[in-house]
Length: 294
Ligand code: NDP
Image (cartoon, rainbow, N blue to C red; front, side, top):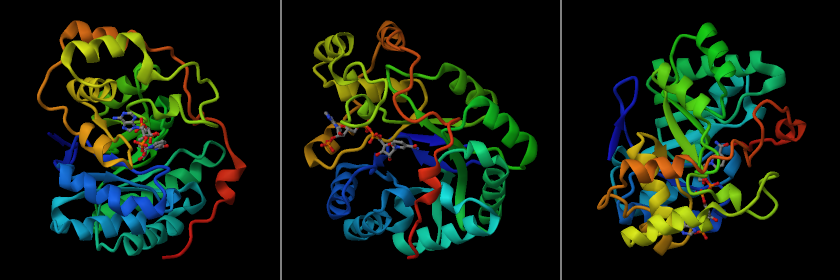
């Protein structure tokens, strides 16, 4: 299933995420995903596995142009020149001469001017054909508003925390109003059960009784139900797994449909409380993290 971005580029709606995929398992995970039918991989400079993603794509035997490769610029590389150089690092590590999607990993709330300068570098890279589409991640409506007022290209995507316990309706509405595609991170609620993550963790969304019941009625798994929910609501989703069976399971979501009532009952699970980091809280440790040269 393909989604058409606001600049006409098409992107497979479902991609493989690789946050916390250990480098030594990432190549195999990417190969397994591409063998199962995925054609979109979401990585980031900060995941330290861009090289392994590139290797997985090469080992798949697919043409470069058949795989949509998305990566993210980390905050310590914000600034115009730094972000142009971040492209060099990412492209060299992945082993490609263009990226399909390059996004800013998060706003830097205490240095938003630098965030804007980075975005202007993304616009330059887009103009040069070194990226096919550009976007942002973890941008709240007020960040989008300032970005749109001070830059020229409307982001193609906004990648945000989005699973049944945290659906961010105001961000989704701001994205939609501006023609920005919402892309869900932790789409099957990983952040709701990662040990050591999720300050507001209450319970694992995977075990929610409403989702389990819908899954049973369709003969599907909770992960498949959540992914179908994203797709039917027009979002992109990038579930992560390093397990080949679960990678395949997460892609078998095109042979059933959720009813309007089922979609509404999943929407009703929203608790309005984020589990991941607050994009408005500056974290000095983020800036201390240096992204190595290729
Ligand atoms: P997900 O919602 O994708 O959940 C991943 C977790 O679920 C892993 O522990 C995985 O374990 C497990 N899992 C995967 N499939 C299944 C299944 N079918 N049944 C049961 N368990 C399953 O969480 P992520 O946080 O990884 O988010 C997905 C992607 O989003 C990331 O990999 C990254 O690309 C992106 N992301 C972006 C962020 C941002 O700030 N922009 C922040 C966080 C994520 P296992 O591997 O063992 O299968």
